[in-house]
Image (cartoon, rainbow, N blue to C red):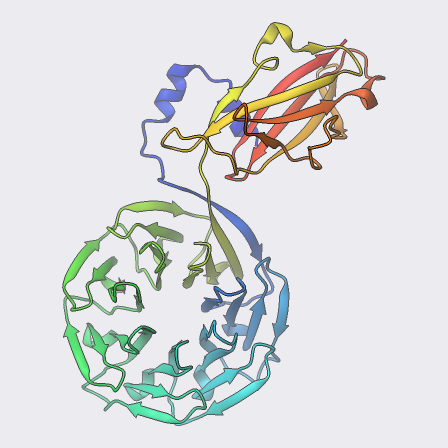
Length: 440
């Protein structure tokens, strides 16, 4: 907050200097960050309700979080689970599949955590991907060098041959549109596309120990974390390369948003999370992570969950709408008129547009007011409106004048003689704007 307020007072020349570096194409904010985990390896968000399942790997637990981060359910630890490595939620019924790595099992949990099925015949499974169309689940059976397709009830529908067909496959991603599955064949340095019945549709090289794949059901393309080449690759449905980009350091997991074709990347070695546009352009890159292991995008709202493994945390990121604040309108726009009579109403008005200059009428803007005595902050004033249409501390939009307005009452501040007030307007894209006024 301090930095943002300082920037508002800088000269235009200095602002231009600070703007010389390329700015991110979007603003991403943390909706929630929570601890209580130990090296979480995998997250899987349910777009139906926004909740997220977590493989809390070193705690030997599986956790179900609400959209706001509240804990809905947590499994017992060992021996119920032993190093759970991957989770995949079915948005149709809210159930979740788990690769229980060191138990050499795959587990199917109901939405409330009840165990629906548990099966063996695996060796160190590391990835699961559920098909919401039929409830079936694909498994990367890592140490068996196999890929397995299970029915919703756990019955085995298909199992690949082992080495050398696959060599430590480490990630699977099913396309619910046609039931096919993409596989990152780690030590064969390849990516493989399998039909629903297991027939090989495509196999391609040019990778170095890839560790993550994510298929877009909208166009059947697939994103690849080409980990040991420190690249991310975008493949068409037929395997043709659409884009390949660097600037990463051992990216681990990718997660594509079928709504807009963009892709989130856990840039493990750079301790960052990256958001790429469908064409590979970088929309956002953010730090504050330590060895982020996994990402999972919510196609309903575009938000992204992160298994921040090295920090022993899970993080929920949201892409904030971006507005252009056109400044405060009179009377707060004029320095000479920002002194008001005690007990009067102070109209706080402003306009905002989107990046193209079009008016924005559905933003959420809230007001906070602080008062200062003798130059020092003294407290937060109660926000009271004199207009019946205003709600709490939130600005209302006046469609006729195309502006946001809050009629601030100062009646409860009549005892503050010649004190200065600072108003803080907070927009729902994370921006804050301040202005001051005085009472006489």
